[in-house]
Length: 302
Image 1 (cartoon, rainbow, N blue to C red):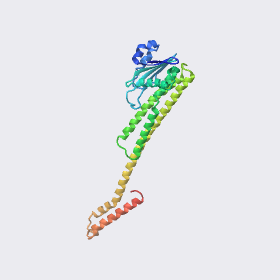
Image 2: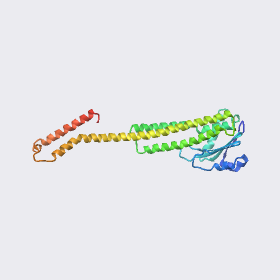
Image 3: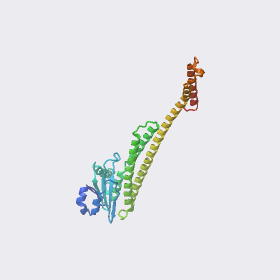
Image 4: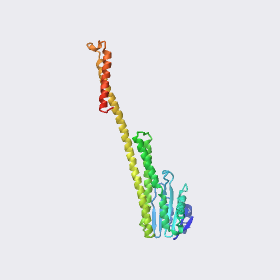
C-alpha cells in the first residue's frame, strides 16, 4: 500500500514483505533483525545513519493496557516514510495508517501536497490523539473512588483496584517514555535529513507526549493519596470503634465495682439484710449509668 507525495512516497507493508524486499529498499539487515528482538519490553531503538532513520515502536491499546502489544517499524528518508506492520493482532496499525491518509483527503490537502516527515508527524500525532481523554476519564474514575472512601463505602476489593490502576499507569508511563525518545531522535535531526521548519513538528509531538507523561505521573501520585486516604479512613473508623467500646466500658465500670463490692457477702454488711437492698442497688446503678451518659454527651463523646 503506497501513496505518492509531493516529495517521495509513503507506504505500509507487512514484516514478511520487509524480509523479502529489504535489499531492494537498501535497508541494513540489522534493522530487519531488530524488528523482532526483545518483544517484551517497550522499545526505543533507533538507527540514524547517512540518509536513513529507523525506529521501532511498541503500541498499546489504552482500553486494554495489559493486552497484546502491537509493534511497528518506521523507515524514514527524504523521499520515503515506510511503516512496517511487524506485529498487529487486531489490525490497529493498518487502521491507524488509513486514518492518517483519510485525514489528508478529508481536509482537502491531499497526500500530494505533503512530504514524508509531515506524514510521519501526523502518524505519530494520531497515536496519542485520544489519550488525553482517556487519562481524564481515569482521573474521573479515581475521583469516584475517593468519594466512595469518604462515604465509607469501601469493600475489600478497593485496594486491589487501586493497585491495578497504579500498575496500568506505570505501564502507560513506560509507553510514553518510548514516544518521547522517538520525538527527541526525530527533533535532533542528526543527519540533517529534514528541513528545519518541519523538524519543529517533532518538537511539538515531543512536548505533547511529555505533558501526557506528566499527567500520568500526577495520576500515579493520586493513587498514593487514595491509598493513604483509605488507610486514614480505616484508622478513623477503628478509633471510633475503640472510643465507643471505651465509653461503654467506662459507663459500666461503676456497676462492676458495685457488683464486686456486694458480691463479697461479708456477715456485717448491713445492706445484705435490708429489705429494699436489691431495689436500692438497681436504682443506684441506673442513676450512675444515667449520670455517666449525660456527662459523656456533654463532652461529645457519645
